Amino acid sequence: MTKMKLLSLLLILPLTAARCSGMDTYNTMIIGDMPTAEGGVTVTWLGTAGIHITDGRTGFLIDPYVSRFGMARVFFGRPLEPKKELIRQWTEKLGKAEIQAIIVSHSHFDHSVDAPFFAREAGAPLVGTESTLNIGRGAGLREDELNLVSPGQAITIGHFTIRFIESAHGPVFGKVPYPGAIGRPLAQPARAKDYRLGGVFGVLISHPAGTILHHGSAGFIPGMYQGVRADIVLLGIAGRGDTEKYLEEVPLRVKAKTVIPVHIDNFFKPIGEGMSFLPASINFNEFCEAAGRYRSDFTVRTLPLARSVRILPVNGR
Ligand SMILES: [Zn+2]
Image 1 (cartoon, rainbow, N blue to C red):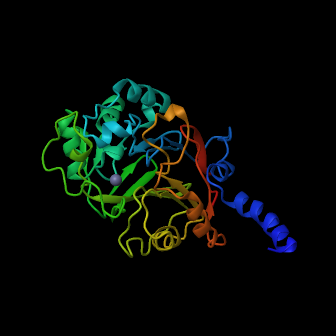
Image 2: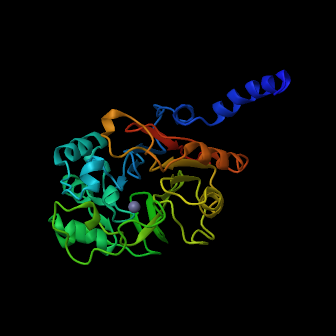
C-alpha cells in the first residue's frame, strides 16, 4: 500500500466509524430530554419492543417486559415468574392514570409475560389476540378485563386511535420461534416455549400531534402497509432478514420521516444495567449502513432506555 493510500484510508476510517460504530453511534443518535413545554406525545422505552406512550392525559403500554429473565432460565425451559414488585414500581413510575390499556403485538414471552400483571396493577384492559387473552386468563384476569382485537380493527383511547394491522414474525436463526397459538388459558408460571406466537400486529397509533407505527417484530407481509402513512416508525430490528427489503416494506412504504430502532437491547439483562445490544442478532452497523442510503427519506434516531422523551410536538409535522 502506498503512503498516499494509507493516508486516505486513515482519513476515511474515522468518518465511517463516526457514522456507524455500534454503541457510540447509538448514543449520538439519542433523542434529547423532554422539553418542559407541555403537549405532544412522549414515550418511555422499556427495552425490547416495550413502550409507554402518553400525551400527558391519556396513555397506554405496548409489549411491556421488565422481568427480563436470564438467558439460562429462558433456554433451559425454567418457569418464568413475572417480577410483580418490579411491575408495580414501573406502573407507579409511568403513572397509573396514564396507563389505560396494555397492548400486546404478539404472544412471545418477551412481549407478553408481564402484560397481564401490568393490566392488573394499572386496572387497565389487556388488548391482543386470543393467544394473548389466554395468557391473561391464565394469570387470573376476568373476561371484562380482556379486549380481543383482530387485524383491521381500531380502538380509541383518549385522543389516540390505535389500529391493528396483520404482520408476520421475523426469523430468528432461520426460523420463527415458538410458532402456533395458545389455545387455552396458560397456567403460570410457564416456560418460554409455552408463549406461542399467536397473531402478529403492526400497531398504528394516530394522534392530533402525529402518527406513530409500532412494528415490534422484524417480519412483514409484503404490501401490508400499502396506503398507510406514519411520521415515526418504532422498528424492531432483532432477527431481521434482508435489511433493505425490510426498510422498503416498513418505513419507506409508510413514508416515515423518523425511524427509531427498538428490540435492539440485550433483554437477558436487567434494565438497571443499562443499554447494550442483543448479542449475535442486531448488527447495528449494517442497519445504519442500509438506512443511510435513504437519508433523504428518513432520519434514524434512538431512544434512551427507561427515560421519557417527547417524540411528537403538537402540530409539529
Ligand atoms: Zn417474538
